[in-house]
Every structure is written in structure tokens, then in C-alpha cells.
Image (cartoon, rainbow, N blue to C red; front, side, top):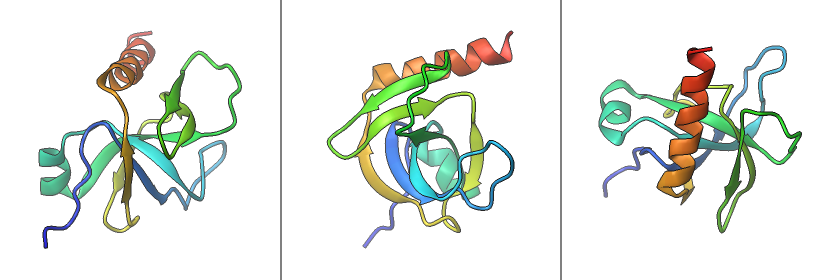
Amino acid sequence: MKSYVPDKGDIVWLSFTPQSGHEQAGRRPAIVLSPSAYNSRTGLMICVPVTTQVKGYPFEVPVSSRVVTGVALSDQVKSLDWRSRQAEFSDKIDSRSVAEIKAKIKALLEF
């Protein structure tokens, strides 16, 4: 049986602990932004956490799937070891939501 490798647009559950300061902590969903080819080769994945605490911040992107509802925090981009943090597939988001997250990250980096 082939083991799971996170792919762009996947919603995964994983541990964000340890964390520091205002970073998201605990086991929570995240949106994968990097492709499976990168994730498989490096053991890392680029992602953003999802929270149910909607505050109306400009970098929040609404996420609604069969399993997860909340906002992706596109200003909290992470590169994480998905194996050691035990990433588990939950669902997929649509390509428009992925594009919106990436656009907000781009706007932040070009500010």
C-alpha cells in the first residue's frame, strides 16, 4: 500500500506544536501549498494553518469543506516536516481558494 504524501490543495491535520508567541499551536488543520513532488522528495511541506476563530483580518481566507470550516491564515506560512508531525489527509479545497491564499502571501511579501 502506498503511503500518503500531502499535495497542493489538501486539507491535512497535523501538530503545530511546538510553537512560539502568536503562532497557532496544537493539532489542527492546514492547507498544503506545495506540490506532492516537492513534499515527497524533501519530507517538508509548505502550508498555512486553519482556525475557526474568524477575526476579519485581511490575510484570512475562508475555508469550507465537508470536514473543515474556518479561515486559512495566509500570513502564517510554515515549512513543516509532515512525517514527524503525522499529517493526515482530511479533504481538498478548490483551486480558487488556493489561488486566493497564494495571492495574499504574494501581496504580503511584496508589501
